[in-house]
Length: 133
Image 1 (spheres, rainbow, N blue to C red):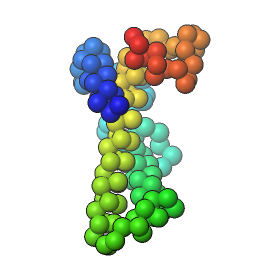
Image 2 (spheres, helix red, strand yellow):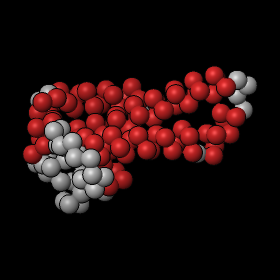
Image 3 (cartoon, rainbow, N blue to C red):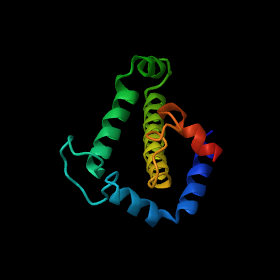
Image 4 (cartoon, rainbow, N blue to C red):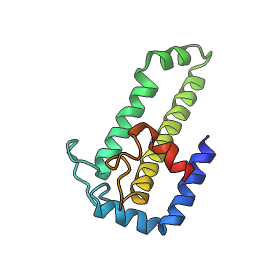
């Protein structure tokens, strides 16, 4: 599944015109501001808000989720639990970063038309229509 998402993202970046084109389209559309380091959590689509969101989400998923705590307590050694928590945090951060990148790529692909406003797609079916295209 992750290989499929990575492949679709890579092919779409190539079809749109490259990484710089994707970033430029997202910047012009107000979806991504690479040089906005405003630490306010209320600023939308800035590097700092994405980093803060991902950090707090990862900490919750790794440290405060009762199911994860139970899994870590089931490990026999403290070092094993630490390694598992670190690995989980890294995997969650990579997956969240991949979701952000994939969202920007979909936006760059559909920047000149909106399939949701034109009623050719619903929010839940955008991924399926995008991959079938």
